[in-house]
Structures are given as structure tokens and as C-alpha cells.
Image 1 (cartoon, rainbow, N blue to C red):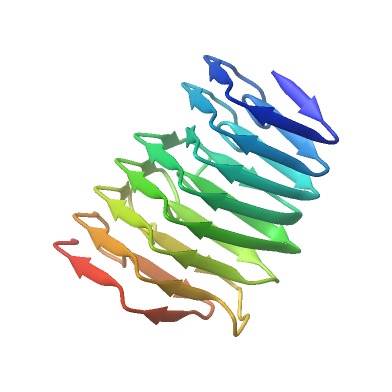
Image 2 (image 1 turned 45 degrees about the horizontal axis):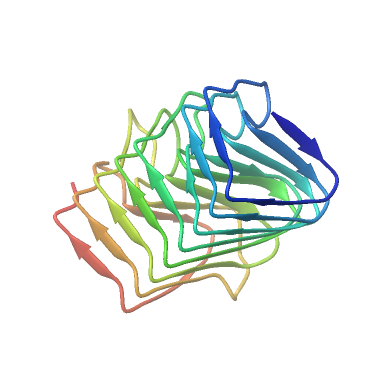
Length: 193
């Protein structure tokens, strides 16, 4: 397990790690994660990575989950498969009560289950940008919302979801659930329940 102020982590493998926050690593500064795999990681917040501050860029990696509270988080060309959140929020990526900008591009979220709201839960003041991503066979339980994306209390006019596919996701109260604001363009919603 790694706890860092600044780091570049490249071509690395993390397996079967546990912590209260960030099963594999905590960032409290700037960092890059490239070509890494995170499997079977567990924590109350942020299955694999917990971002406390700084600017973190994640590329070409596969995950159990990410929890971000401050700074800027960029995820591209990455995969989130069959993860499960016990904390009740965000099966794959969580941002909460944060001055955070979140950008996710060309990434896949498949078979994710959460006890709470959202495969991605976004609750921050800066913009959420999700582009060309796939959300397939994800689910939330009970009266929770957003099997794909849950935007909570964010009214940023630049929030944007574009070119995404939402297919075979399960939740009776919305695949994309807006308790805030978002521009949604050129997305495909197919066979969601």
C-alpha cells in the first residue's frame, strides 16, 4: 500500500489490499497512474485510490474504485469491472463535498453494484465531464438512484455527459439521476430497467 504526496506509478500491480481509505493508495498531492491494475482492494471509502488533494491523472488502468475529495481527477482509457461498494455511495468513482473537477474519457464501467447512489457519484463544485464512456450491466439497490451516474447538488453549468452508452443497467429511479444539473449530448440509452 502506498501513501504519497507526489508520485508517478507506472506498470504496477496491486492485489488484496485493505484500508479505511484507499485500499491501495492515498494521494495528498499531484500524481500519475499509468498502466496499472488494482484488484480485490477494499476500503470504506475509495476501493483502490483515495484522492485527498492535488491533481491526479489515471490512464490505461483497471480498478476496483476511486474516492476523491479535493483537487482535479482525470481518468482516461480505463476499466472498472465488477466492483461493489459497501459504503453506500459510488460503486466505481466517488466525489463528495469537494472542490473537485472530474474528467472521465474513453472508459468502461461494467458489472458494478452499489448499496447507494451511482456507479459514479459526483458531488462537487467544479465541472464533471464524462465523454465516450460505456456503462453496462451496473446496478444500485433499494431506493437508491443512478445506476450509471448520480449528480448530487452540483449546479455547475459546464457539467457534461456526451457520447456515452448506457446499456442493461438496473435501477427503477434512473440510470442518470440529476439532483443537480448536466448537459447530456449524443448518448445511447438501451434496455435499462
